[in-house]
Length: 129
Image (cartoon, rainbow, N blue to C red; front, side):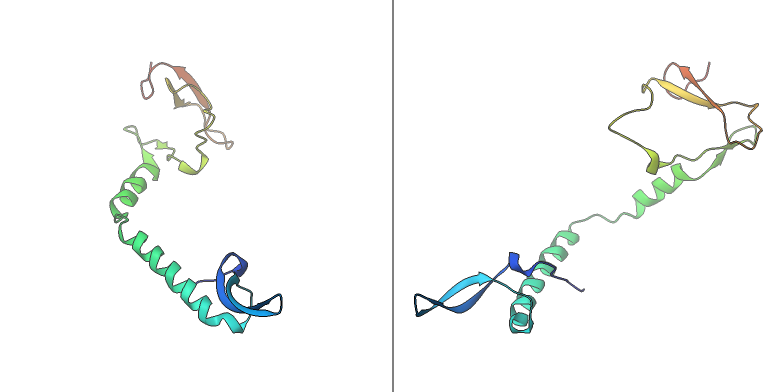
């Protein structure tokens, strides 16, 4: 695993500094440079450890991927006509395009090269008049 620290100033390193002419050891902002490679290593190992700990509790996504593939694959209806796939990338959850109680059907006369023509039907989703 590789970790890149773009803003090392967010992390601290113990350094001998001079305050009012007297040396003090303080935690100061970490700068970019080879002098602090030991601290880069410590910070990176801790971040990687936390990441791997969080990843260890994540469930195996194989079943979810299989279920998603099932609904996003184009299908054919009983008459052998192609049905559009469910496209999850075009969903806009913040603003629905029509009420949830409506359904869409593809017009059987939509044979032009301009794609499917759809009409909105009022009623429970998935029901046809």
